[in-house]
Every structure is written in C-alpha cells, then in structure tokens.
Amino acid sequence: MSTGVRPITSVMWTLARASNLPTVWSNVLAGWLLSGQGWHAGVGWALAGGALAYAGGCTLNDAFDARWDRRHRPGRPIPAGLISERAVWIVGGVELAAGVGCLLGAGCVWPLVMALVVSILIYDWSHKRSSWAVIPMGLCRVFLGWAAASMGGSWWPPDSGVVLWLSALFAYIMGLTLVARGEAVGGRVPWSGLVLVMMPLVGTWWFNRLERADFRDFLFAAFLFGLGAAHVWGRLTHRADPGRVGAAVAKMLAGIVVVDALFIAQLKLEWAAGWAVLLAASLLWQKRVAAT
Image (cartoon, rainbow, N blue to C red; front, side, top):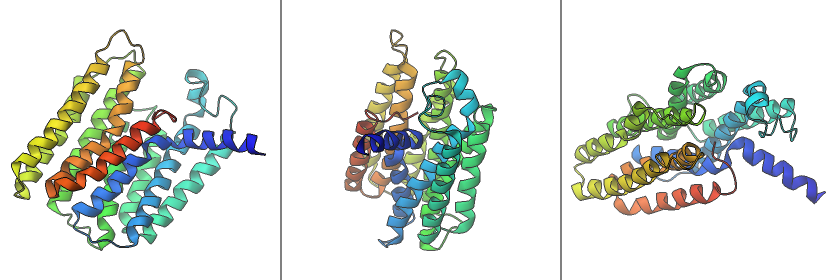
C-alpha cells in the first residue's frame, strides 16, 4: 500500500506546483498586514484557501493543457500516464471549490473571491492560446492579495498602500510571465518583461514616502532586491546553460515573496524576516518539485 501512496502524492504536488505555495502564503499575509488588520482566525483560513485555490488552478492548468502536453511535454503527469485526465479535472475542481469555501469562511468579500476564480479559469484556458494571458495571470495574484486585504470587512475603495502593492505585484507577475515565455521560444527574453519585473522598486519607493518611513529601509530593501535581480540576470545570460530561462523563471517565481517583503519592510523592517523564511522555503521546495 505504501508504495502506491508516494507516487500519487508526488503527482499531486507536481500538478499543484507545490513549491510555489510559500509565494501564495506571502501574498495572503502581505494583504492582511498592509490593510492594517489585527490578528484573527480568518488569517489561517485565508492561508489554507489561498493554497487550495492555487493548487486547484495549477492542477486544472494541466487538464486544460492535456492535448498540448501530449505533443510538447510528454513528461507531465497526464501524458506520462501517471494520472488520468478525468481525475485531474476532478481533483482540480475540488481543490478550487475548497479554496473558495475557505476564503469566504475567512471573511474575504465574495466579489473578490469570484474574481479570483474567474481569473484563474481564464488564464488556464487562454495561456496557450493568447499572448494576453499575462493579464489574467497577474490578476490571479492581485485578487488573491486584495481578497486577503478585505478580511477586515472593507474593500472599496482599497487603501492606497494596498493599491501600490497590488500594482507592483501585477507588473512583476506580468513581467515574469513574459520572461517565462522565452522558455518555449528558444530562450528569447523580451525587454518589456525585464522592465516590468523591476517596477516593484518604484512602487516601494512611493509606499515608503506615503508611509513617511525611514528612507534607509527602502534603500536596504532595494539593495537586496537588486542582488536577487543580478543573480537572475546572470542565469538568463549564461548562454552555455540550455535550461537558463527555466532556472531563472523558477527563481523569479520565488521572488514574488521578495516583492511582498519590499512593502512589508517599509512598515516594519523586522517583519521582513518572516518573508526570508518563506523565500528559503520556496527555493528549497523547488529542489523537490518543479516550479513551472
């Protein structure tokens, strides 16, 4: 019996892109703190709901892509025969529905939760069909973070700090997605993607001024962000490595945690230590489960 459990568990983790879950928890926690809420039980439900919604969206992504994967990525779970396409549809649907239930139970307002679900499904359906899929991809994280920020009961108009954070996150995700497309087109990396990836620095500077925070906090956070960006750039330009784009994209996915930490550090620099733990968890998890 135990020999059958491990492969199925591994398949579930692969379908869910589980190594990216720390970035989901990062978005939820950032939305909670940036909206000025105190601790409440809904935070735990939102963490679970965000994880389940993300896992469901990623799992359904494989179901939507089954035909394409059979031609281009035969190692994915469905074409490899590790799980049936029907089972993937069922598992993904159940995970997404459970995520919705948890988010609503956490107190997230229903229009934002529904917008998150719609964004997930539109992205899953369109990302192999249209270059504009970068927009719903970015909106998935925006609505997740905004939903977490709404747990306090107020969601419109959103707080200006939350708007700056979500705008920076949206730009970063779109840039990341544009760079990731280079993985499928011979490694050509669009400059527009790299510019968008750097936009969180602008948002953080603005947030620092808005909060009248110590400017040294911004400089310190920007320095660390720059170190990470230099590392990713080094991977992208390492021509001798055929997998350089995929490796860089995996690091950029983990970098979602860094984007959140930039803003959290402007509220209280010590809080960013928690995001360092999430970043380490994501990078370590990527060694066992592929991020893309």
